[in-house]
Length: 402
Image (tube, rainbow, N blue to C red; front, side, top):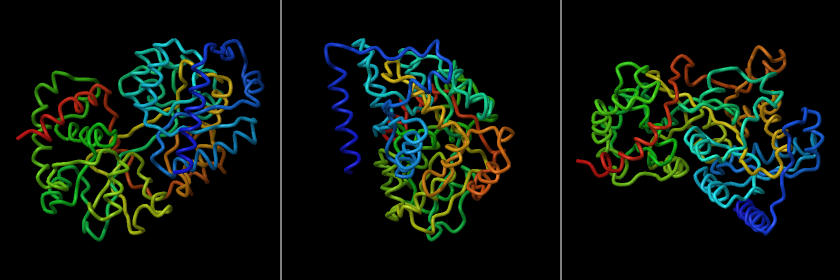
């Protein structure tokens, strides 16, 4: 709580400074080579806007990334914990006010927020090509070009790649469901022991996106935004969720507002399962004492959405050189392998295995742990407009629907 308070106080102070009569222009890195960028970054302070609801993620930033940046590059990194919707709204206000000296340099965002940032000119622009790690180490997978239906154009870089999985209490779940149909049957047979977050939460929305996939005859039907498919099949999606409602925790009259609230219900034993992107998330939550030590993980053999999350930069970064150096470091094998450690984050990497040393490959194999979700079950993350469709209709059709 003290760290959170200090973070917001620091943000308030920075905001007050940046709202003065003069805006100091940031360094122009456009014509610099990488050595010049690193030299310019030395001695700088950078801020990262990011969700702060996971202690393992916070520990990774505070106890690994920040000290390494300080030691290697003389860069001081400050983490500002807040929801992406909050800092994107802040950036929109700064853009409308033409405030060119912002309060943060790095953004942790997903596809929906990236689309909004790109459409509203809230992002720094193309920077990926400046980062040596992008060509030296990052897997050249489709997710470097497209994020939930939006062309990336070098305006963000992948930071982690994960699949959706369920964590369950084996004392309450004898045989964990491995398909969505089995899950719905389990909920019917065990009323009150399951729920999912409100769809304004990314994890809760993704649960419903799995229902879209389950309704579809062919996953390819949804690979691009398909309004005609929604018109023809949307009612079946809502009907499946309505049929689930009466057997949910508190009869579906209320839903956790966030994944953190969902996790707390699970930790308290009020529900038998929780869920989330990152098939290894339970390990760090067990380690820190949040989840019961008996917690186990299961993936959906019927298909599990794979999600990539990204690092970007705001249009008004006051320290773009230092931001580039920090982001580049977070893509290197050292930082990506440290991120795999379940004592901290325990989260999937974005590295090209062919670019790594034998020692690095061995470290990845050691830290990756059990394989809860088979890679061949991975489903493409859907276009962000499906997220909007779910948010626009769920309350009316499911929560209030008959």
